[in-house]
Image 1 (cartoon, rainbow, N blue to C red):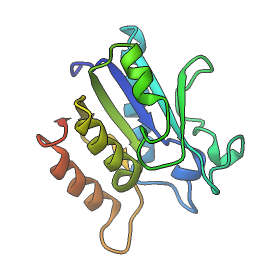
Image 2: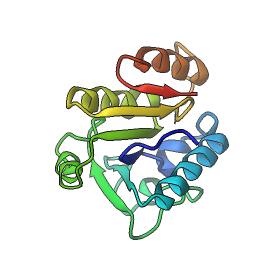
Image 3: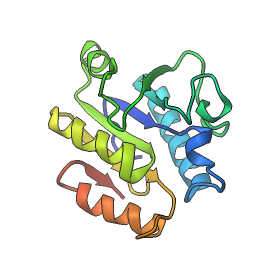
Image 4: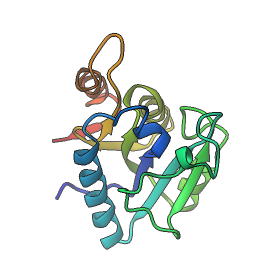
Length: 167
């Protein structure tokens, strides 16, 4: 088992993000990976934070806004509501991390080139030590790259610059 960070940050694993006409790339594998990490963090009594995006497509309390059913989310888990790709922007995330003396974060979720990339770079700028499991984020194919190529592209940028990629 790779070393755990002070907290696990799970971003936007919501129905409207993961199922947009089709299923997001390597969804089943990612869910198995994320749920395994949740189990490890719970066993070690470490902080787990679930981030939930809210906008005109992901309206709070709507089916699209809900976490995917495959995610091991529990009612007592800590949840951050955000309206921007940056999980820190106009949320209480930074305050919560400081209250709990969190210095390192493991990040996972969706979508690689949007909310994951923005949060990784902002958290790095705030001084957090970051880790991510290889393929710990996901996205859809786009006009320029396949989902797999997009993920590999961003992991190459992040690794050893913004975070430690765990193989």
